[in-house]
Structures are given as C-alpha cells and as structure tokens.
Length: 111
Length: 114
Image (cartoon, rainbow over all chains, first blue to last red; front, side, top):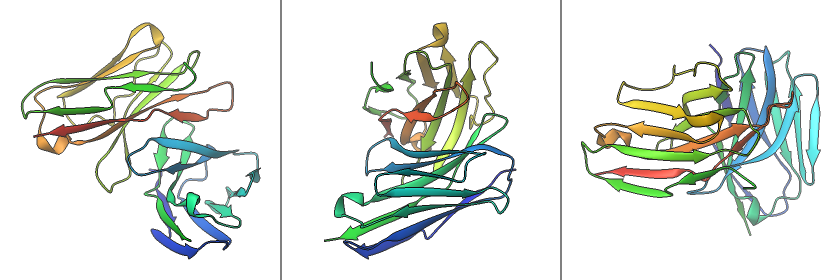
C-alpha cells in the first residue's frame, strides 16, 4: 500500500529565504507526482506535475525534483515571499489511477 | 466553465438529515474524484469515476455515502442520515487525462453537521 509522508510538518522562515519541502513515497511504481498548495479554507491549486519519466519541473520561483528510485521529491521555493504562506501537499498517482496524498507542510513566510 | 465548480460552498445541516453535494468537472475531463478533508487532516479518498467504468468506491467510509455521475459529467455525492463526524470539507477533482493525468480541484463544500 502506497504511503506518502512530508517533512517538515510545519516551517516558518523569514522573507527572502530559499527553502526545500520534502515528500517521500514507499512504492516507486508511480505514474506521476503532483505538488499543490492549499490556502486556509480553500481548495487545492496545482503547482507542478512531474511525470515518472521526468526528473524535475520548474515554474517561476518553484522547482520540483523527482527521484523515483529512492521514493523522493523535493519542492524548492526561491526567494520566499509572505504570499507563499500556505499548506503544500504532494500527491502520487499510482498505476491503479488512485492518488495518495501526503499530510502536507504548513509554510509561514514572515515579512 | 474554466475550472471545477462545487455547490453549495457551505452546508449546515442537522444530524440525521440527508445532504447532496454537487461537482461540475472541467468539460472533457473523463475522470472525477471525491475527497474528504477533516479539520487539520490530510485528504481522504472517497470515490473515483473513470469514463463509463464502474466507479472505485473503496474509500467510502460507510454505506451512508454514495455518489453518482450522470452523463459522464456532473457528479453528486450523497450522505444519508448525516452524523457529526461527517463534518468536513468535501473536495472534488477532475483529471485531464491525455497521458498527463493532472488533477484540478474545485473549491470544496464545507459541511457542518450540528
């Protein structure tokens, strides 16, 4: 059974810092991995999707990497801003077409 | 519409009543998922529809929960005889398919059972 974990559970950083969020999964037979952000009381917004054949994806200040063999993905946020404060979730898509989500990392960027 | 929509955005009901939650996926998306997110918790998978195939109901927590998808588009999640532990945000997502399989989420329905 696929299990997804995220470290740290919560992170607080001053504005301008670069930071890394970690996602680990137990079964490497995944179709893709997707990173989301969730603002309080809101739905999930897709940030980046990495196919199993890819190693990284970039969008603006965000970079996500995937090491399928070791069951790890990282989300790198450069020059963090207070507007980046949110909960960040990773989800893996198994070949059975079911998604498994991590518990999330709650990020606070202090001005 | 441009994205996934859900209605109502908020629903307050009394214990024992039935509720219906609606999801309108992105046009053309063949797959649709329902999740539940309790306060401070992660996302819990409930049910998955893919085209005309039988839905994957493995995540439904009890037989009080059911869902249908009419015409391969709009989906309704029904909770019968609601209990206080059913209080949560119910999220719907549709899948882009076409070998990308990216999920797009709706804003959710916040259900409160008194």
